[in-house]
Image (cartoon, rainbow, N blue to C red; front, side):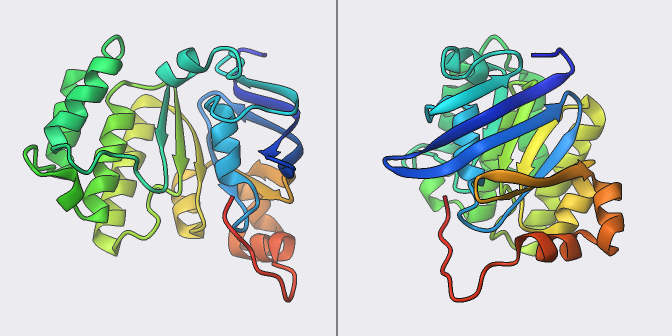
Length: 247
């Protein structure tokens, strides 16, 4: 894989059982870019993240993340990658400080204690609070801290601000903007909010039917219809009389 590419996928296929979700997908995410992944529910966005993290085997094709094949080097990929899922996978019985201590221990070689303290202060996270008692917004902030404190080379964001109230969403996005500006980090983010995409991303990728149907710099794609919403509707308008489901 070329050194300038953080992610390189060639003709990859993946799915669950007999159901194919990604089919012949090819994608390049340049190092240092912020790439937004757009698609309807069920288009394969979450499946793609699982493939990149080595959590789902591919059926064919090639996948490289930071120069590594996640099917063969999943631990090495995870060590260099920060992932924020749409629904944080956090033990509700843990206190905030316990969750941080656990991940700190697992990621000790890359963990930045100063960044941990900075983000905990920015997010005003209560260290003694039980995770099960936290609001959705606080859980999202904690999940973002756990992803950013190890200083990842690649950040994967699966709808990081989905369902958050406007104030918390603004705080989460501001932290991401600050992180990207300070570190120049490579980011692949899935989002259904065009304003978030336009604020954060410099590249956009449209996913439909398990394949990339359009990609390019945000400015170039936006110029086609005057705004990203127009391109999204023209490319990805759901067919009539169908019900979509999240993949």
